[in-house]
View 1 (tube, rainbow, N blue to C red):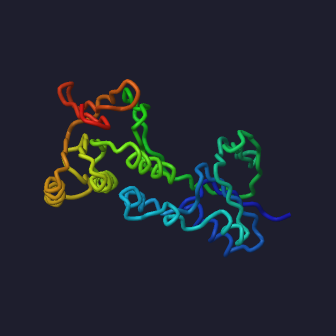
View 2 (cartoon, one colour):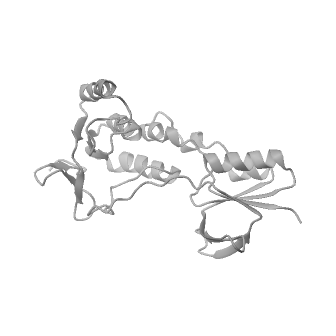
View 3 (cartoon, one colour):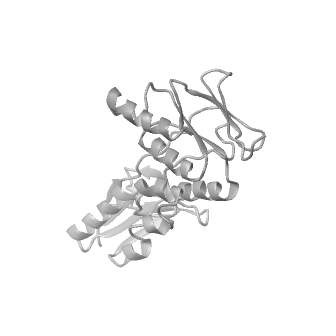
Length: 243
């Protein structure tokens, strides 16, 4: 019986591990479970897809399940591993397409699920119009919202690399952008003098920066219309039209 390798996670690390395992052992059974709808994509390009520099999301897809199958690797999307039993060497898998759950056996297991976006316990966080950016589906949803809803104002929580790239993307869609961060400077990984240069560039493009102001709540009856930060007097409105 062939040895069976299961990999949890089908993006950069997971698919690299699968390809390396195939090169190392041509007889190995390799199964990759990925809970999103895509594998092997370039997440760093998401802000540029949202901006419109990259016209199609498919341009960020490096490999598809069909292409991996040609290498003898089974990659199953929308399949989430919900439990691992190390003693029995099994995983419990939920097929999000059908709702079915099933058990699979492994001889070797690689965990490559990656990170997830923190979802803070802030009132109003679940309101429509609030997005996180991690997966292909996230990027598509944000771009669709910008194109269809044409919001006039946007608030980005976080002044790191992705936050600044998203500010550029929203600015390209004629959105007035405010960046809110609880730290004391933009790009906290930079030295203060370098961060000031970045801040000056953001100011030149009329991006409002609110530092040392943690978000208190998101407000709106049906979808998010405002972000409250620091104190109740600090209020950034997000409605799709001026009122």
